[in-house]
Amino acid sequence: MFCSRSLTIAALASGLVLLPDLSAPAQASDPVRQVDALEALSGKHPGFRRGQAKGVCAAGYFEGTSEGAALSKASAFAGDRHPVIARFSVGGGNPNASDHSRSARGLALHIDLPDGGQWQMANISAPLYFIARPEHFTPFVEVRTPDPDTGKPDPERLAEFSEAHPETLKQAEWLAEQPIGGSFAGYRYWGVNAFELTASDGQSRFVRWDFKPQDPVTPPDEDTLATLGDDFLADELATRLEEEGTVRFDFYVQLAADDDSLVDATTIWPEEGRERVLAGTLVIESTSPGVGGEGDRMVFNPLVLPDGIAPSDDPVLHARPAAYAVSFGRRAAGD
Ligand code: HEM
Image (cartoon, rainbow, N blue to C red; front, top):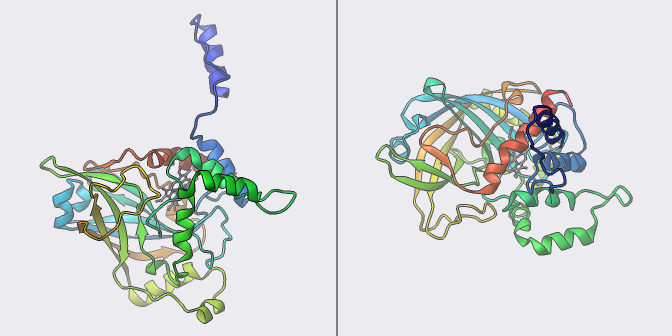
């Protein structure tokens, strides 16, 4: 709105007739409203991300395989070790969230590639997302935000929205069936959105990717979980790295089958009957405990991709960078 007015004044001053329609409705997917909605749900925590606020930064490297190189000409797969800054996180906008919460965990990566290239991504410990369309993000969050009078979300609004958009319940249903993990190293992390890989011979294929722990970590039983405080994940990762030296994930790309949606992240791509290619390895070597690690100052923008990897048309994927930029702007300003 402010920009439109400034533009109008400047245009009038310069003698141009340029009168934007100030009464036009807000954009369907509005990153400011999305971030405002997250703040209303989780409270405002100055300096922190408005999503996946609690996290720990880490560093290591990514190494591609020849099978990955056959699918994509991206230099990430060329066989060298590429430095990685990573951030593991806990879902939601509360930096004091409990590690016992049943939210999705995050694994975000900045992979530095030759000649200043970069591959950024932010993956979650679920194979699906909670909205199929970016314009559903704000209402999804708003209907879950407690009414100040009752301290609870309005059950009618929640039911009405869920009935109109049943796909928005699927991620929570999936997460409810998973055990609470005792280690960031034990989760599997999915990119969820589809991407297009292009090989050096020009052949393109749509894929979704995931990071699978090389050494499975058995989730703690109820009794063990009960002995853990609210902040065990970051310490566990640091201790594991001290003892074992590295934490390793296999990076798989799964090729889309004809009936796998390229534009709906609330659907799971079944693994049966699909080609899965081991395209690389992520090796985590160190963490930086506490707030202020290198990854804390970064944005993990899933549209920063090397040549050889391109976004699909999934509208949720394309809406992400604007919301991340709004959140980054606020936290970088100490807001
Ligand atoms: C319209 C859809 C989405 C909106 C509005 C949204 C919003 C946000 C915001 C505001 C942040 C904080 C960014 C920052 O301050 O740097 C964030 C972080 C994050 N989001 Fe999303 N998000 C969306 C879709 C997704 C999807 C589909 C995934 C699943 C892969 C995802 C995974 C993550 C992760 C892992 C982080 C933490 C990244 C980090 O550690 O910096 N988001 N999201």
